[in-house]
Image (cartoon, rainbow, N blue to C red; front, side):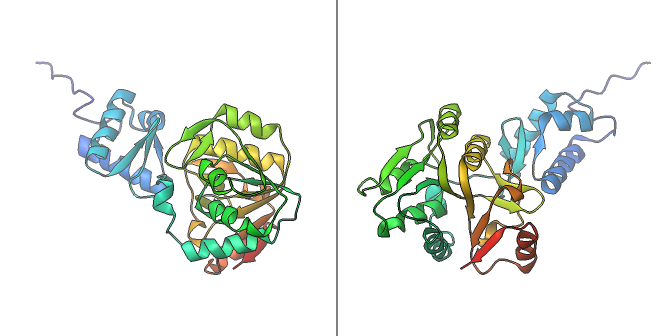
Length: 268
């Protein structure tokens, strides 16, 4: 008598894993690699993408991972992009010291490019000592902060990301490519000497990359908790920036790695 076929919902793949074993293996891969893609998991386990999506949906329903377009991320991770308001109070004093150091790099009459984010918002608030600047930004909240100044304030245009009050997408990228900035202040969610500068959102990464290419001087601004971390989307390699401003809690190995790349490091 012929044995009935085993469906892909009962076993996993060429490795013969049961459903629970397969899902546990997926979680292990997410923790190891920082993300997984449906296409890659389908190849690894030798099962359909539909089954992989069902597995990921199930794991998300149990609070074990975060679904993303085309894959999944760890549940609690730098890969998850929290709202701007949730970030504002995190490392607040450090951000204020970083902002105070950042404005010392600016000269009257310059064109300053400000990325979206809480640290760059702190920089915008620290510009009160200047009278003649052109500010270009993709952050609606930063433009609002500077609305009553004498600066020329230019918004990039683009699609609004409500969680970050930032503008992204092709319109924003095209506008950035058409300008030249003297200095860019760029916030990131992760910095790794090997992996480079990263952020959770692919659209943010694209406009950030365009900003780096259009600026004469690129200054990365972020608190020390962002170092040694990798997020989903690459902005640029680490050696594409000129200066890093961060707080004095930066681990020694990260300081050594930054200086080893020939990047100016300002600790505050």
